[in-house]
Length: 146
Image (cartoon, rainbow, N blue to C red; front, side, top):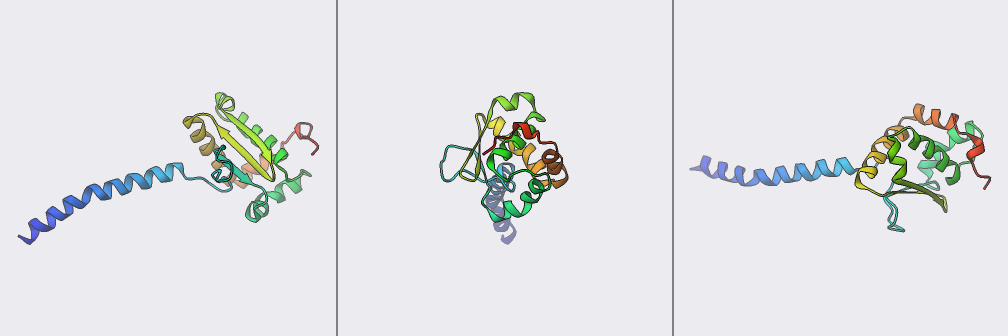
């Protein structure tokens, strides 16, 4: 009798575990990487890179300094556009970038574009050798003088 009760409870609990695993997997697939954050201030953009965040400054500013580039949203925009050019060519038609108040604001017009942007940029932004390559190759004539 005890075994039947245990089996019934285990079978009743199984869908809960499966649902929790699905929710965890769904959350992991949409998780952001450093330094991307969700837009909680404007609720218009998909991602924001906060350039006044001390962790962002500590990790990325030395690369800008190394190549004589200002650590600003305008320069980040150029770097991100160069990165965007190396992804699926159609992606650049669905992603817009904007700098404002020590932030880089990123908007993707489709779910697919958000996912592809996040996947590619998370790889680049977490690999400092690759990130260094992009910073090193920045065309300074594309950088506005702000």
